[in-house]
Length: 410
Image (cartoon, rainbow, N blue to C red):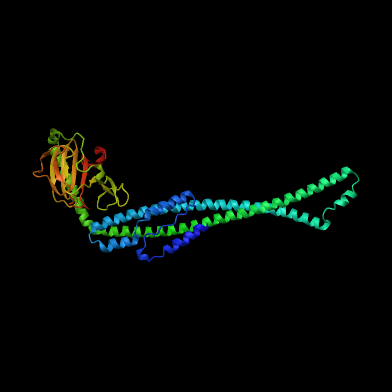
């Protein structure tokens, strides 16, 4: 307990820094806490230890980033970071509360046991007091009188044995009382330690709850600001989704027109190769599935903001060769708003692949051309809605997007 108080004082001194330069506050994790609380506290600190002040981050995003899409990306990253902190804070609070409840239960049992022990000591002290009063009123044992008044040797021996038994009983009574008083003192000390632990845990819990409230408020403000940004982008977003729907509708028609030619050329067998030979699955920067990026495709089955990433992103060096994942008929969509320079390859039997954000197409490539599996068809870039060089790669089956890793094994 003393060590905890001293460390708390040192931490309080170190924590006195101008608020504008403080990082998110970490909580001192006392190794003497219950293991679950200590581990939750360590996890909490690991989650926030390197994060700068969240409100300052939000202010910076709002005031210093002029590009709306970049702002939304930064807001998404901040919301994700806040959620990790909030989860760690909630875990710490839950573990701390469980430890407080357990200690409180032990304190209640300890206090009940202490009451019984004190009652027993009180009875023993009463017996001792009665014995002392008797000795005081009758005086100590007169051994001469015991000898002179004895009628026989047997009576004398009986009296001597009785006196010894009384003396032995008195000694046991005194020693027992000393032991019981020590037990009372130890029980009080144990209860004080537990009460101190509860007090320290309550302070830790209050600090975690205060940080949690701040993070929840900052996260709510970040989401409100993201909604404001999304409203600003709504017209552009709607245009991109309309463009995407138009491309998908046209691809559906092209699939009917080119299906037979693609199958005849050897495509449509459902076997695909990795589209960026220079950079394997380790270069994936985003997988297929629910996304926190507001500008992705709407999917009600995903959590807030209910968006889904319809392919995989492969972040190879700018200009890397991109190859046809399977034999098929190519169709070019240069300059789209969302995909940027887009290539669609129709493979037959309902299969098609999308290659987005291209820096350019392979020399001589044109729409309607058959492209063999593994041949270079384009080059990696960062056109359209892109935050950096990467290939956005999709596999469609009868027009519906599927996880490419099902076929690629990534």
